[in-house]
Image 1 (cartoon, protein in one colour):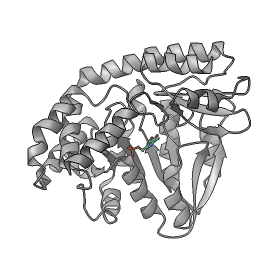
Image 2 (image 1 turned 60 degrees about the vertical axis):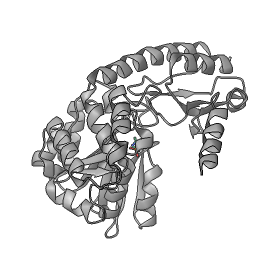
Image 3 (image 1 turned 180 degrees about the horizontal axis):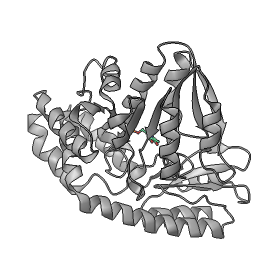
Length: 342
Ligand code: PLP
């Protein structure tokens, strides 16, 4: 009813003072072109509009230097990760993952019966590619690399990554999660799928494109893998709403918005790191829109200080060393965050 929607808006507005620095969203997004696409196309959302998926796939294929048949759309890259999990779990075995890394999605792998084979990071919090390689055995169904890594913000050097992926993919499926790659200058490894049947790249519009709530992401892989993933997605390419797809198409045209977000993020991140260091917090050099830092030498109750100031933040990832993650928000939000810590 109109009253119910009014209540909803009121309850959102009453939280207007909350600062969201927990989930690595883009505080500036969606892009103006994406906003316009949502509004202008609201009236066609009574139709399925299957052809919009075809349009978006064609744009994404060109951008990633692959064919249309190499792309699968999902409701966020979470759906893609979930489809990969279902696909590789059709049997017994294990999967190899860095620790800590992005692992909310791996519950599907665990529930379907795969064993988790965790590989510690290096002391400077990078993914240890050599150790990951050594952890792979004949029962390994999947190797997951989050590049750059969440929660640490570290990146694998491209040449080393390509060498690693080439080796592993001879026998095992490698999933490269590039959710944050647009915050770096590193080129995607998406074109490797052209001549390698065991590589899957997961991409999302949730981060630099600022469309987290629109739920849109995609997979890039060899056609056989895309077909296999599709087997578990009954609504192939159409779990995403037509509005989100059109907003994604518009976002891809808005290079200015993306480069602005990149620069703003760099600038605000640099400020936040230097302020955190002044508060005795060791920071890992970040390639993303978040910072991994240690509370070991911070002598106040971090979570209490932030809660008192209505700031939502990440949890502790590594008890030893008290490592936690903070999203890079807007400059005023980070100033509020630092002030709350002080
Ligand atoms: N991959 C990584 C590394 C993430 O950090 C996230 C979300 O934070 C996701 C995937 C899932 O994002 P989405 O489902 O919004 O595309």
